[in-house]
Length: 188
Image (cartoon, rainbow, N blue to C red):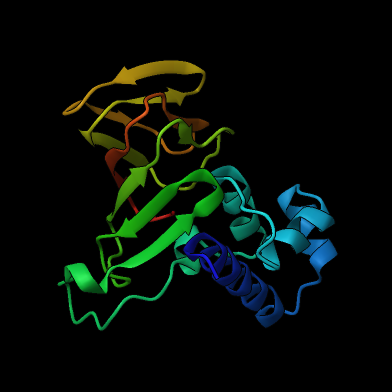
């Protein structure tokens, strides 16, 4: 099985497990998330890859954060997260990988290191419950829209905004982009 297929299947299994643990039906979660029942079923079976906005909506319908769907990393003790122990989430159909740099125990800060593939990103705006968010482009270029305003960011640029405002990002280049997302408090 190809890596992308395995990752989509694992993400789908984690979503299904969260839904079943809450005793929620496919229909009720889909309705609450604002997605079709067939799409949610396809996501759970690893046939479809959700966008960041769709995954955020599904997580919200399950009263969970996106971080709840991250693949388990290794042993994390205290506040140190070793490189090999990071929890990660891959959006294979979108060529995005997010890695959590902060431990689960972090109550006031969440840091996500993202690798965004060429001509990829979040095509739908989404919101979440953090107060503030900072995006730092570590390598490459990234376009970020916040409440409809477009920011063309270059390597080293940082942007701070309210996470409750609709936002999305897109890598407009043919190269992979590396980005740090810093949220306070954690809500992704």
